[in-house]
Length: 357
Image (cartoon, rainbow, N blue to C red; front, top):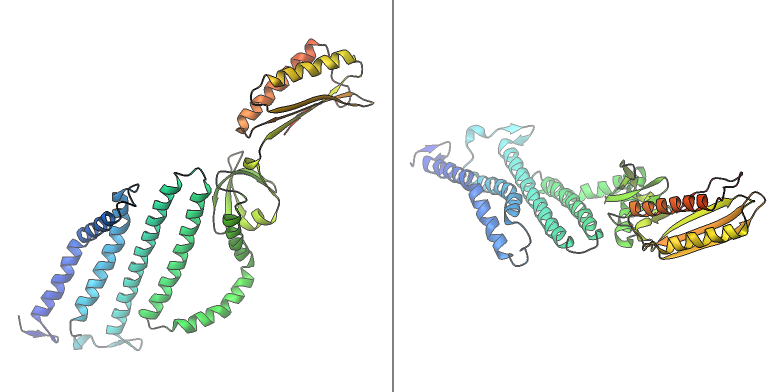
């Protein structure tokens, strides 16, 4: 056991290989046990979270980090063999291997931190689901992605500094100059990024709201760092830059207090005033019989050269759109049936009447 081979005893080699094999064989078990221990420590605040899901998130990155760290420590205890002391591209092989090992270790640790961010976001999502506001969920997704990008950048800088000895300060100084040029080249992307913060803090709309912006109308499904995804009424998936969502006039249909319906009837000039009055009374009575209609206006609005104009206006609460269109259809049929019963004709010119909202 004390025999020397390449500057190390057989016992040292056996201990090194044994420790590494031990960690390789038991890293999953150790990682699971550690994850369960951590979960138990915070059980009171994590009672709504599935412990198996937490374990699945943590096990792989924690096990990888554990194996790499133990391997670096184990090999560090050995004397580097003289036959392997040669250079690669002016760098000693020992330094190259150590730098690669540290780089992998930092990447594994960054991976672990990213999984922890996912776990924290999942817990916050579960708590946000208990609130009626859908904006909380979208805010969590946004900051989860943003923090993961920042952590990834920090991990790369840390790897360059610790593993390869690169002067990060000079890199940051160079990046500040390059960043100014990039900022000019990617001005629109930066404007969209800033607009995303405006959306989340000013909250002109939230995920789940029905909005109209420029030529797009639909339900907001996701607000990202650069753009907002909208599911239109014809079920297409439209991506709108966040800058347009902030800078242009946006109609948040979901926030309106009432839905307005309007009808303009152009009646024939031979229609007697008594029948016009009877038509108005019939429409008023029918509108009053619909529970969803809160207020209404029906009046003999105008006398034109081509027709008599009867104006109908009604308001409902912000009910689902299919329900509102069903109410409009009922009103349309009732007006047609009433005009047929009273023998009232549409004017020859301007004979089309429509319901708008």
